[in-house]
Amino acid sequence: MDQYLGLKYKLKSSENFEEYMSFIEIGLISRKTAISVSPVCELTRDDDGVYTYTMATTFKTMKFSFKLGEEFVEERADGVKVKSVMTLDGDKLIQVQIEDNGRKSTHVRHFTPELMTVVRLNIYII
Image (tube, rainbow, N blue to C red; front, side):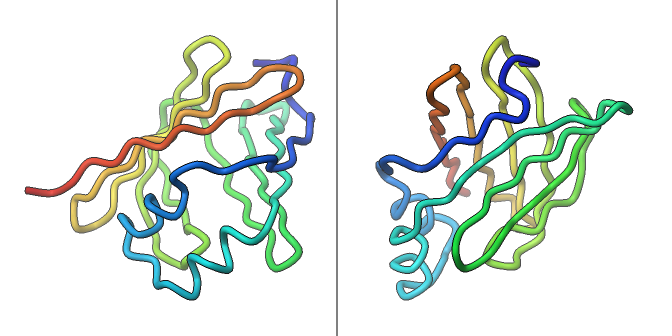
């Protein structure tokens, strides 16, 4: 993963992002705003092994810091606080988010020198 630290990735395309936002109950106007921006994402790590993931848009910059394998509280762009855990699997950074209501989302960020791909898996409460 070290070779991808400090690289900046700009959103080129987005598939099923609006469906994901609907799953986590983001309102229509906020969804339309979110899909209209092209964030720039960057992953960094400090000397203590703390990673920081930054996503900057013209509207807002979101940032969260974490240690691999340790649960942390993340505030999403919609203001909802969720519990997250990040792990590495080769060139993939895997994030599991759990909301207070038990709804779970998994975000798999696959890094290459030229591209970062994000796949989101949603688990519905039954």
